[in-house]
Length: 476
Ligand SMILES: *Cc1c(COP(=O)(O)O)cnc(C)c1O
Image (cartoon, rainbow, N blue to C red):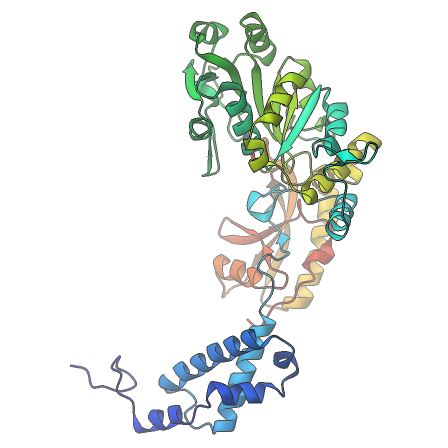
């Protein structure tokens, strides 16, 4: 048996601790004291009482642990008030701005594409005022919310019609459910993808009520494989862009144009899930070539689906574009009501599409494209500027070196292709890379970097300006 006391776990208190606990002010006393505190008296009574109760519990726990027993009742009340005030100062909205130093431009966990200024303004205006979301200003009658973006999408993709839902997973879900519920969709075994933990094509198809008919093998699928699988139950042919992996070596896949011919011959719609879906050719920015939506429509896809917040550089959304008759069927599906976008998304998407229609160089105004287009020399400048700022803030002890690094588009776009980048490698003789990473996560705003070769790194491919690193570090 261990003797009871401070060092043991037993509940028996020493005389001093018991006396200190008796000295603790009540919640009512704390509430009265808080009336004289500017910050605490400015918030609602319920939240104020809650913060004081929590602070009181913390101080009580510390007294029970033998810390601060000599304090007077007034001193204890002051400690509780100070603790509650600190908790209030920390009480920020849970969704916070962070600095993306990961080198992944479209980082799903960090919210993917940053919006263009005009899209941000459109969101603010739609939030602040009533809007013609489903109201036709010409006729004065009820309108269709898709109409806000359909014109732009058709002009930019060559599609006859388009509809928008919550994200690309939803776009594929509603396309499958509308065209093939209770029937079969034929898809190549080489395209049965998982993107992140939560998007697995076979599971999504099961939820949409569609039976998956797999053809070919992992590395090779031929036109005859599709043709042989077509039967009375076949409702569509599905092609999925292998966003986040590559099958290399002895491979064969059926081109979209070939698949479209098979579809036409058997009167079956051909649907392609493009994933990122670029609206413009980005190869001029020294970027790997992603499929361009207009080219896929031209190559014969009856419908394509793609994300709004990947290479398009807009808000989270899933776009279905293609033949009018099929889009109209999707619009009549009751799922459309469950999956539709809100006014803020449509405001941002229509403003983003307007940039593509108006500008020869959309990358000037669309942050995701602007970030991807920058040269390594530009990033080097930003990295050097950030180094100066951080040296001034963190002082000696930290070693900071601008190094060559490799960034990614992210969100599954061109995973095997790395984009030349620059990073700041930050080390400290007494701190592990994990400890430095944690310190940067606690900064205001938090800086999210990555660890490579046992060192903490901040990559500048997704950081537009050195001043982004003018962050403050709480005492460390
Ligand atoms: C990213 C992606 C999806 C999922 O899109 P979300 O907009 O995240 O729902 C589906 N299919 C492919 C091929 C993708 O790349």
